[in-house]
Every structure is written in C-alpha cells, then in structure tokens.
Image (cartoon, rainbow, N blue to C red; front, side, top):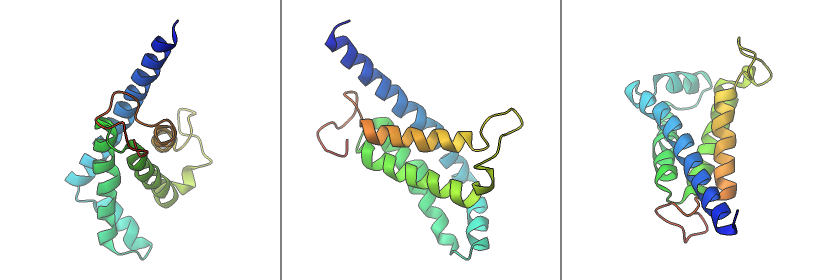
Length: 138
C-alpha cells in the first residue's frame, strides 16, 4: 500500500468520524430544541444556576456539530463539544460514571463516545475532506 493510499484512508476515516459524531450529537440538540431545553433548565435550577444558561447547550449540540460535519474550524468546535459533554457528564450523569448499564456496558457509554470522539477530532483535525483546511483550528 502506498503512502498516498494511507493518507486517503486516513482522510476518509476522519471524514467518517466527523460525520458520525456530528450527526449523532445533532439529533440530541434537535430533541432539546423541541423540548425547549426543559430538562436542562430543571437541572440548572436545582443547582442554583440561572435557566438561560441552558441555551448555551445550543452551541454545543447544534452549532458545533454542524461545524464538525462540514469541516469548518473542527478543532475549535470539537473543544466546545467536548466541554459540553464533560459538563453533561458531571451535571447529569455523575452517579453513572462508575456503573454498568443493564447490558453490561459502561453507564455513560454514549456520553463517553461523544466526549472521546470530540477529543479525537480535536487531536487529529478535519482532514482533507473539509470546507476549510488552512487554519490551525481546522
């Protein structure tokens, strides 16, 4: 296998990673839009944090995934997504971090997938198949 083929495979892998993580978390963002962020607002109220902070999730679950999918400033967008997921884990799923679900999987495997997927995208960048490839944030 030539070096060129390896580079193309890596870029295709990065594209698949970006699209997978981006689309899957975007579904959560759309669901939160339709519920007017009520779960997040209730969670924040219980912690004494103003409700309007719930709308910051819009950035992490709608805007950042769109940027990741199209390949524009993916390193910055993946940092936003990683921060969003870390916050969600600590605020809503902290009791599940050291548990297994009913099928024997990690209690926060979905949140972990998004968190570590975002970290991988940050570390590897957008790859060749992206709207923008010239910035250090791509």
